[in-house]
Image 1 (cartoon, rainbow, N blue to C red):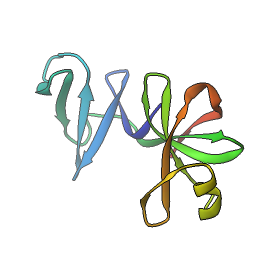
Image 2: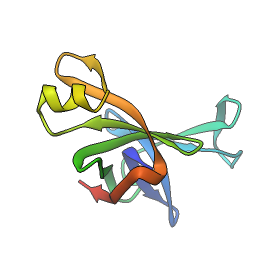
Image 3: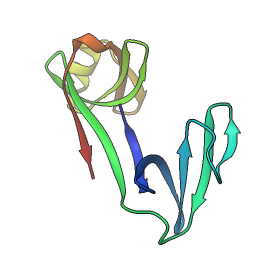
Image 4: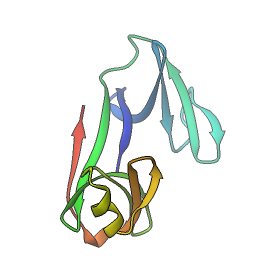
Length: 120
């Protein structure tokens, strides 16, 4: 499940983060030109013209017939954020109010339907 920037570089898609005109790309394994920032996480900064398309990827879904975005995945659970805009429904679903009007919770992956990856 993805929710964030990705960039195409050297025929492969990487997780990315815009950094001014540059783009930081991340890899899970060591690679030429990448620096380890923590175990299992490597970064390389690319200059304009070195990389292809930079897009934002967001995964949406339905859970209990309500709309959500997928924020994370852990084991067989998905971290979801409710996008229906109705606080009573969010509370009825047992979601926690992460911020004012922002409701999130964990759902068993097998209960989640209509997973779709949007490229913005």
